[in-house]
Length: 383
Image (cartoon, rainbow, N blue to C red; front, side, top):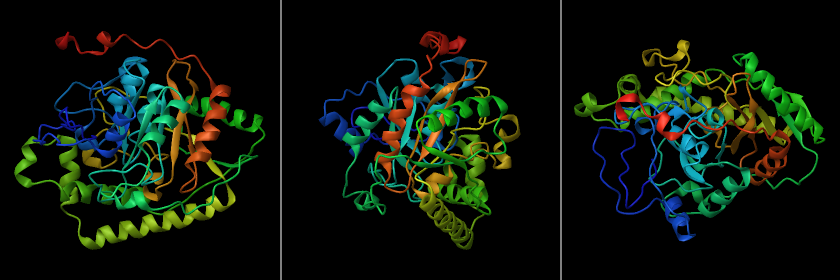
């Protein structure tokens, strides 16, 4: 999804994409610091779904079980890091697209505060962030440090933090548990909660409610997809994304304004919550990885139902508020599949969650299973 001057950026699509003439700011800054770009990884078409399926490549499979998804939309990036193909990768996150595959693949995925890393070209819906995926919190923090800073092409990158830095001390942590969390995920995440308590932090259950949140997200995403899609290109579009585009074409300005009102209500609600808590914590994804050829669990796998992101309720709220969020490996299920723990800070509180994640990482350290060799991840007809 990120522009690279020397490699095509097809964005998982059969639709034509002109080769960029210059690197995205994040890529340019990494190259200037000595990073070597070894290649581009797979994504769903324009990052529309949280599973890495497209018409240009086979499904991206989970390195810990090739029958299952790596998540998405930055699933190729997460799988590459987990399989040891690279030290770090970059992703875009419009509703969980960095954190979801990080959780499924057992790596660190960090979505900074909106604008901390410039996003060029801009995302009109102001949901998308750019951030790193890596095997350790320290590596993710280093990558983010190099990429961060204002850029004239991204007005949001010039906005300073609205929150004063919070001291490194005993933290007040609000723990969120979603109703759809499976027993396996809840059990692993519970060990992370014990680790936080063991470090001396005050951990309390908290519930965050916002009316019509998921429908508002769907309207914002669908309107954005429809705005950038020409009817003459429909035949080339991913069938699932086309369902979203067609719905977006039915929306009017009033629908988008109502969705923005929901976003503002959520921002106000979470602003109040963050006055009581320094950090929020929860399982990054409440479900375990599903089939590699599906866009979601069975109840959310038909794009016509517009529930293609409903199974990830811990992800998209923090795109709507612009808050920083990081997923780190919390442990393994009995099936030896990774589970992620998500830490969410106040707007501008990136250093706080990075520091907490680094301290927690050693307590949660679980030897990850040896990933399946890369050749085993390819479909039979591609070998």
